[in-house]
Length: 353
Image (cartoon, rainbow, N blue to C red):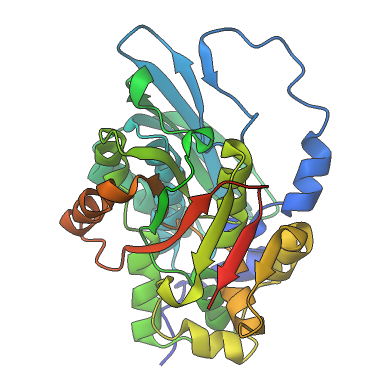
């Protein structure tokens, strides 16, 4: 059986040229666009800006509080409007958790083809987002709406963090272990969904993964042994690991056999079911990755697969690994696993079998 679709006459995903975090501008193109930005004066209160590709901006309010601010939005990755709203909201809130912060409120970003989408469908998208914000304990305090060619939904999210507990990409240290909180494969499942090859069970796994809030981030930030946090989204595990490496000026080693995967994604990838973003990701940063000869195209696809609302990637001291995994397990992240380590060297990633 196929996964559930929108009750309207057209599939929600048919309105957009791409979906979820696969909509991101390719990292190489983005780097070129942004190469001359960031030249404005930086006030001392801006603790985190764009310089190390962190997940959110952070502004110091006082000695005890800093404001975390982020925004994220995209086109539909699924056809069910309520699920689309849930996924988009979960993904946006994740950036606050990835900085070690506690979300406090959100603003909605809503762009819809008003003349083509029924009002009930749009309402269900917003209700999906509201349900996730309620689960995170935050209000949607406002927002902005426009009439658009493609349906777009997301949030501006703000949170609070102690200035001493911010977890930046630049904070990772040589010898740190890398712990991944969620399994990979969301982009592959979205490709299977578009080809009507995803079962009800596969769809349920996709929704469970993309709507699970990365709540461990706040508790992880309290651990002295946790040195850096990020979340895995549109650039895939390899791309976001490289961001962490470049921020900290370190190299990484990943073990493909240790990387958790959503059930069934390896088979789908082997059938050629994956998004174009995977290839764009590899074209942008493949020169900074060395993969073992025993690994093939499917492994490369999975490591570059764009994750919508993906898991946290934690860089922590070896003696903090048990605490980190304990926090993940406590919050229901049963597949969290140690997937590699950071070492001294140029910012590259070596992938072992």
